[in-house]
Length: 354
Image (cartoon, rainbow, N blue to C red; front, side):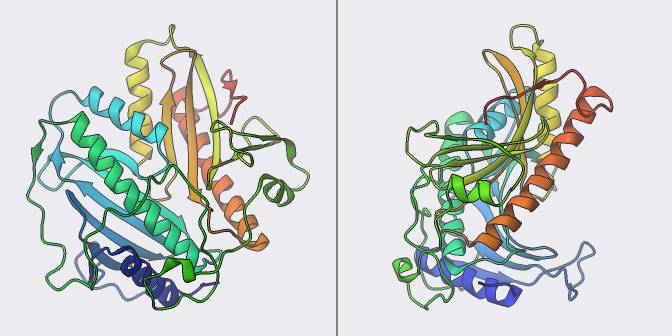
């Protein structure tokens, strides 16, 4: 298990080489442009990814990996439509999180990120799986944005690497939301391009999830939306207690509430809810908030997704769940308070399906 920033950084580089993604090192700088040398230093690897300014950052407080990218298109016209499109992406995909932001030139751009908390330690296979899914997500979202905004003006991207590491440009792998269980996991990563040499960890299952939240479990439902055995969710005590879903190799901690029937909520209110979600989706913790409800109830949800196909030991699983549930709970309470003017529960309806 890797618990040191230098170890995680080295494993990240090996994973990028394995998938064939070229990168180069960039020194970390603070907000004033001065070099950062304290515990919050972020090593930055610039990636060569088509149609993207992309980089992987190593956070040290807490220890984390962050894939950050900006699509090369410029959003123009109806901001409400931009929010709807990005909200739809976030509601249907686990990576990357997408949000509209203004760049240094004042242009509206799509910022994308994928975050993995490594504070509980991380195995080489987990780094490998995260890199593959994050890069595959960038490839998929590029196609999505090109289809949604075909007439968007394009900005000129800087060359990410004058002397990149060895390895051809890569799309990054399969659909990250397909989530096929990985064959990888373990402790010591070899310097090889063969990811199958990594040793698998303990599979994450619904029963193991329930076991590390003792005294809280209400029910376990197997056979999730895809119909595959092992998918489903663990429901926990309390309307605001985040539930835990397992879907094709992705662990999702989620909570939400209903805001009324879709036919009774004005379009202006829906757009405002999307705008509130978009605002908090710029926070760096990786929690994604969305609004759904084209039919039925209008539901606002906050969630944190993590690939677990490479497996986890019990201590890591417990720590990851505790951290994720705390983050999702805080985020959702803040959203509800914003929407209701201070209430964190009130008359909102509990969401009964994870």
